[in-house]
Image (cartoon, rainbow, N blue to C red; front, side):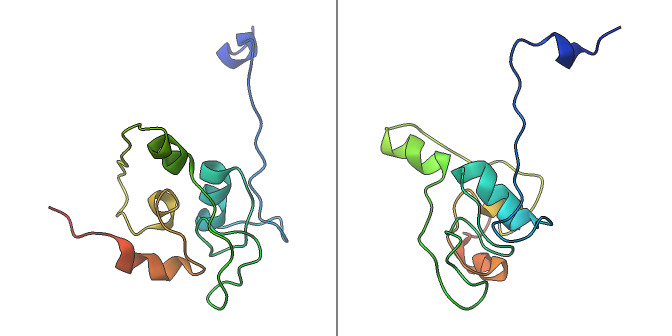
Length: 108
């Protein structure tokens, strides 16, 4: 008996480990998911040249930013607080995951 996924005609495997080590945190993991590029632990949507908490890297465009450039409406819904690294990777470009708390608007 096969699992449902084994009947699918296409599937994808993704490697989201960081640029220098195999163990990643959620900031670097989500950066890989939303930008398609790897970075360093603690960094949100900036290139691997960034040094966490010290030096900025090049901001990486997220797929939401690409969609907005093409006139699409976007939004983020999360069961986490918006400054948490997982949803913040969609909108923040910072070299230290703890800095993104200042980038989030207050809830309505």
